[in-house]
Amino acid sequence: ITYKDGAVYKGDLLEGKRHGQGRLNSADGTVREGRWENGLLVEGKNSYLNGAIFEGEWRDGKLVKGKESYPNGDRLEGEFRNAKLWNGTAKFTLKNGDVFEGEFKEGKKHGQGKIT
Image (cartoon, rainbow, N blue to C red; front, side):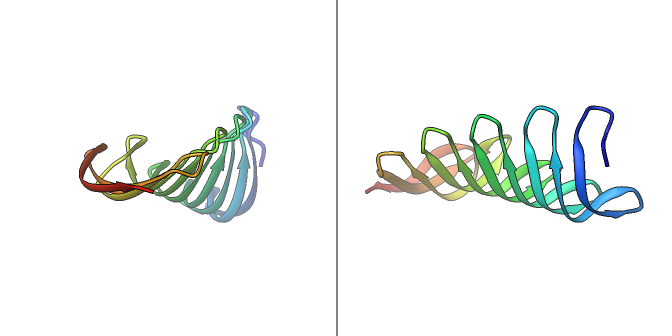
């Protein structure tokens, strides 16, 4: 399917919506692939033109649990809300190999943590 905005979808459909396995190539270069339900990605990854990759579980079009990898080599793993690490334990790995593992609450470091 080719959409009016230039995006191209290849994959499963249900009642005209993306549903099942598929891949959406957006006009801006973003690639979304994985499992879709009712037109929205629910499990899979987004690959951006700048080299960033977000993968994991999605809700309402937003990453809620998984990993974010950035072009500079940094990686974040944990739970997300509003594009921030949210509640629970998260792992932040820097390009140089340093790792911070610790607790976050409402998007901020909170509680125990360690750097290795």
